[in-house]
Image (cartoon, rainbow, N blue to C red):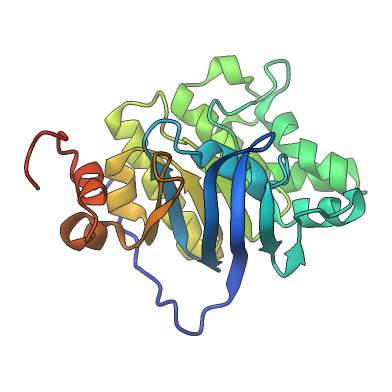
Length: 265
């Protein structure tokens, strides 16, 4: 498969899919990152990353409503989720899909049954209609011929694709992905990148990707938001290659160019 390339969307005039204002995240009363101001635009592929322990997974937990932020405002499609009640959160959860790092497929179910789960939870469609939708989503990710297989019967890369198909089940405008390339070889990882770009172009889906895979960040990311746990803040936001080559922050340049801290940059 040819290398994927993402076309950077212009921010001007684009609708904001997710808005963060003054967001601090952490555990208990201990903040990991403070004061995040960030707009994520419809139809973009945004990567969030940084050094180990920088808070990227904790931020994802706040974005997908599993962990409230310590402070600040998070709005998804205009709906405030910080401090929202369960009814409002259920409404928001239909607006996004989630792909977990290890796929989180249920081993005792077929791929079709795994992809059908969100439809069973959130809709009252007839079973035949749910099956048709699940098969269509598997077809979108190149797994149409594998619907009746169980996760143990397919490769790790195919499991990641099946997890993306499940995230697409309800046609959400936003999908969160947690380390999608983890555990994959470089070729399979590049194929997964190409799939994300294809789905982004075809469906206009907004992808928010937690990752430290520089090849993916630099090749398909429209923008990169970099967190720094030492400084407890977001230290960079912009097109990854521009940040790598021209950021005023030496740590950002080193991170994106994979330069050892003792080398000049």
